[in-house]
Image (cartoon, rainbow, N blue to C red; front, side):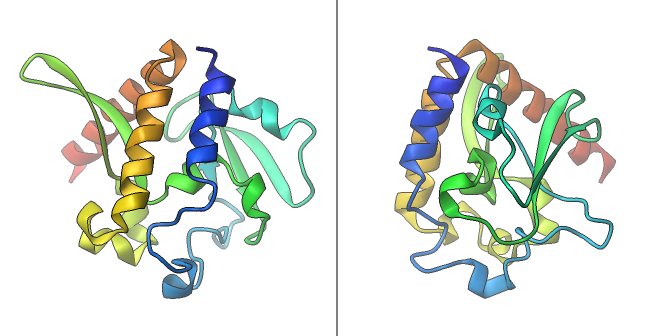
Length: 169
């Protein structure tokens, strides 16, 4: 499966779902959508997803991110956007898929994105505190993406990044 095709299928699964059965942005004032005081923030694009932002829609900016995963692209909006334009990471937030090695075996899982704890009050309740349909759709999306070697590499890189974060604490 091609990277962009996998992204399109995953995005479709999450088009109408959110972590709560209501607009979760009402809980936090849409903190995950707002850039910080330096205009930073945003969501990393999944491999192949950048093709969906050519040309770049009004109100969005795209730049290379060397902070989380060098070479990946970070999409930032002005704080309000059409749901149909939201990147996959935004649709999954505050969850993220990772591939990690446990007991010598590689395992795909969906977990709280540790970067989300700074802005998302839903993190405190964990995956179990979210709408089960949403969490299942994120896992199903991760499985679709995991069929593609580019996404597998991305998930592994995220897993390594999160392990480094954990070791800093």
